[in-house]
Length: 151
Image 1 (cartoon, helix red, strand yellow):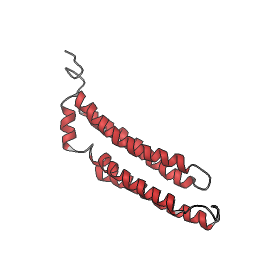
Image 2 (cartoon, helix red, strand yellow):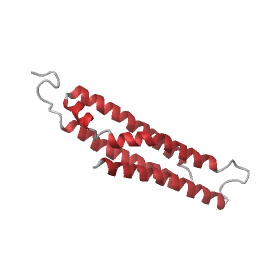
Image 3 (tube, one colour):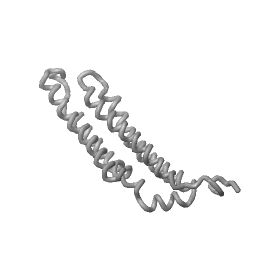
Image 4 (cartoon, helix red, strand yellow):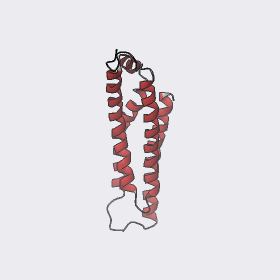
């Protein structure tokens, strides 16, 4: 998958999280689901927006790092470099995955399930992209010869 396609998919899921949060919370307030003396509904809305902005650089790295030419050159140097590149990429994926998992856990309550589903879609996309990126990183390696210290 092209890195631009990956970025579009991840950005659209992030946008859907924010739009769904805003629409659902405002609708829940109009429907009287929240008590009238409850805190402002803007707190969870802006919390979601700020969290999304914090995770956006990681989405950019997840989208563009596997396609970078220097990563391919590093991976061609041997299994050690490929593992280091994979661990770096995995740390970026883990940051976004923690955001998605915490969103699922936070919003998995009655009247908020659509928000949790949007976070789950992001998590599902991350798992799919991690699998394809892992395959791409390790596809050019030759596991013969001295890669593992063999003859």
